[in-house]
Length: 287
Image 1 (cartoon, rainbow, N blue to C red):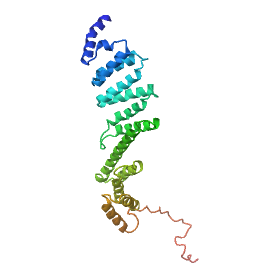
Image 2 (image 1 turned 60 degrees about the vertical axis):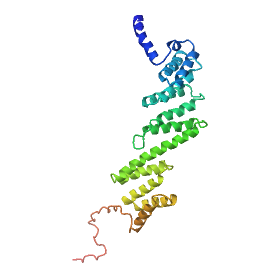
Image 3 (image 1 turned 90 degrees about the vertical axis):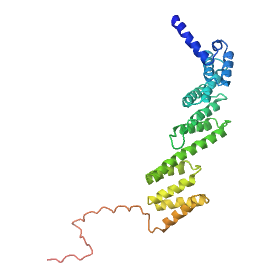
Image 4 (image 1 turned 90 degrees about the horizontal axis):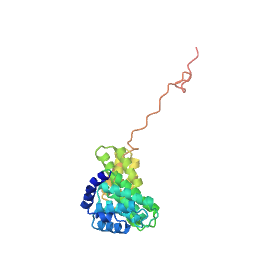
């Protein structure tokens, strides 16, 4: 075993040297010495060296006063280095910190950073919105758990950004169904979701107008008109006002009820042989 360890030692020392780690400092019996080296490496953005020193404090000095800061520093080193893999590692380290130190003065910051790590991975509205949904959940958790946090305002701003992105993604899907496939029902469901779940959406006026278009196209005139009326009342300067008025006039000029297919007639039953088919006619004369 000693021979094997001796053979491996040059590789370990070489790895430490390559990452800029002072082996003597890393193996020091003083947590303060290791902590100071970790801070210096972090300031120089030597992430690998910083992480090795942070881990040395966590593993080698479990009772150190620098333990919480070392765990947070480990998470921060991954977050600051960036990249999808590092954001995932950062999330894991922040959550470990929150589990071990739920009442720490920096716990609200760690929670905010979990949301930030997901937020940095979010996609444009035309792609998968899973990272955005996860970021939103983490930001909302911060408001629930740390309502007096100094990060509340930043969190609310992030929540607004996430919700705008999610609403836009829903709109893109609805517009695709409307324009490309003429799948009115599918488009209506998407638009309804935005109206109900994202009433603060920045382009809600377009959602309302497209909803009216789809309802009109599917023959649901009575449902389309209130949306057009809402658009004219709530967005009098909207770029869709002229088109909304034209569509409203067209629908109002249509005679009769909605052009949706009429309900099927009731099923016809055969008359009973005991009942005269024409009860108003006189009975036949007796023989």
